[in-house]
Image 1: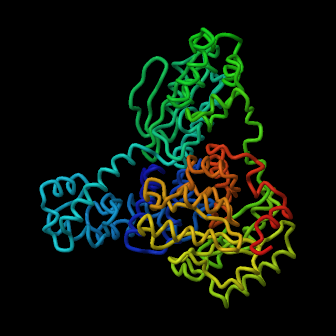
Image 2 (image 1 turned 30 degrees about the horizontal axis):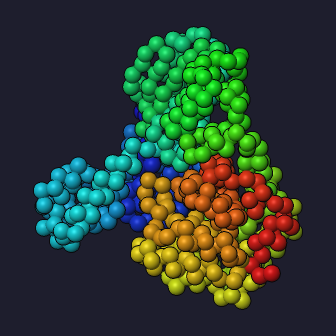
Length: 569
């Protein structure tokens, strides 16, 4: 007999198991399996209990036999033996505390044993009272570093990853659009601008029946709490603690409301100044014509419509007097998947799996760029296995139409040299060069490391350039403009990494690179067939950086791309 367990409770528990396994140092594959399982459970539209009783859990994509067993135990008993065991093995508050840089489960245990600390707030108070420095393995410098890390964490906690926001925002949008009383509905705010992290989700709805639409919004299955509500708006908390607001306006006011709730404050201020130049208030400009889209408001002000991703108040209003942004890169422009991993290193799927998935997406080529030998943690491909990989690529090529390019994600070593001998790199079709280790080098040393790497005569693509992990790891220190200057005069391009947890490099640096005439690739950094869908995130960041189709190498066809990135000419 099943207990009454909500699927969102199960999903949260699976995500926590994954996080606890990460704290224990378990393999990334196992951790990812629980994270994927959590997302799969959240997305289930059928009754979870029925799936369990009928033994159909393994038919759900992302749920294997082992994961199905854990889910079944949750549904039938309300808990999981593995979950209970992991919580017992690790100190209280370990998940929260391990998010603080410099704290490992072992150090969290030491703090708990010595001071009874079980939360970040307790840690802060202990640091402020000077008690942490007395714990063995800590000290005054560590205590100060912890205080600084806690302050940074508070800043980060005010934001949500774009991928997490979209994971609940798009289903909410579908839920609203399916309601008969809704005439139009669109995402707005940070999400519509495709910001890498967002403060909350905003949805603008056109309807003459605000009350019933807001009632319908509250019935969205992933609503965990209604925060507040008035006649035209409801503020919600969605699964994953994502804040969201649904704004309902009369259809005649929809385009104007969407405009005002999309642009940044700086963008709207600039737009208001343009209206003032014409003797209008922005509200009056919105009423000049029968408006059906926010694009018409720009036209009414004598401007080309500014794409949402560029509405940041960074010169785009002035540019819109002349630039129609028609050549801003789009997902449809991308012809090949770049930076893809397989089971030869730390990927989850085979070369053929990846090839067929990319082919099904309409791609014309795929780069196989597994890790190089120095990346031991990622099963970097040693020389003896590299030839086996090349043979496998050749075999798969005979069975698929998509062009397969053999490559590597070569580690940039501390000296700036690339992993693999030049004689090997010269035999590849494409080289991605990335920093994966010694990320805490000082600014001067890291800059020199990157300069040396970019000066290498072999053509290379600078992979996930600044090594950031959104809300988890800041970009490493280096003099970015100095590195860009070297790239501009060397044989290199820059990757716009579409991994939604990286989205590296950030738009301000893409704009600086564009000024120097540097070329780009938009990648997925996919470690599975599912990861190929991250292309949309790479394109979104590229658009925020103002990248044009002609500046993106993988907007070229197979022959043009291969010629452009060939390591040796």
